[in-house]
Length: 54
Image (cartoon, rainbow, N blue to C red):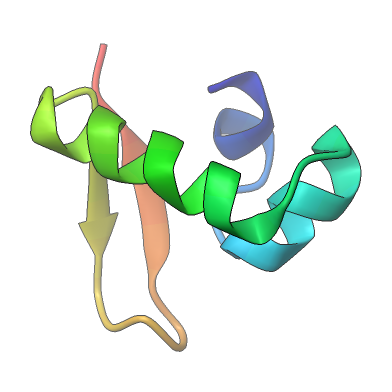
């Protein structure tokens, strides 16, 4: 979450590289956060950004 707060335009691939995880593992976590209303995607996949919901 802190990574997405500091860089909302971060992609799953970039987050995976920074965290040392697979891209699929990051995508699963992002999906879980979105399902739990803790994270929102604003805009399109290309050019959009993440909004962390407090």
